[in-house]
Image (cartoon, one colour):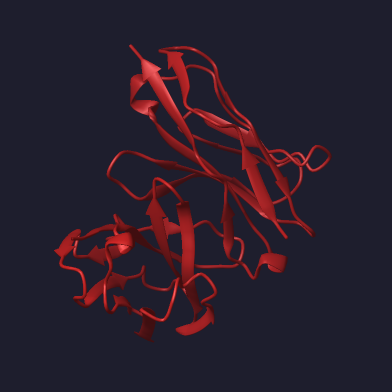
Length: 113
Length: 113
């Protein structure tokens, strides 16, 4: 398996623009997580899915953020409109079971100018 | 709620020194415990795990023992290498947490040649 695949690796956008981050989890994993990492706040859980259904989105900062998982092999995180404070590394991770560890993607480094 | 506390860094060691990174947790029930490692510019990687009391997880010379009586999961390595320089995260995952993982703040390790 190629692991968790995220795209793009880097994204630079202007304030106010829409940004879409993509994630392909490991086949057979039924949990998918979106995290954000910054120096100031560390690793923050934004939202997670189980069997494509959103379970907990309490970490989504505000209505500008939305996430979807239309099928077991694909998820998106969208920010509209983007703001400079959204600049961070966004990670997607997947897991096969309730007690298992996560496999993380390589992340998307987002810079909003 | 569940929580993880790990020692603050950075930790600076000389090559071949003994490493200990302390981690304690608070959780109801019986969580699974993990150590993850993050190298610069990469996502977190699962280093080792333990799923029940007295289990010892080990990988790449690192080991940690699940101590329920002291609610601890300290990471150790007998002889560190320069290539071990990274950020290490202690984490737990439990039913009461909705099976999402709670991460510690991370401990940065520098190993000098």
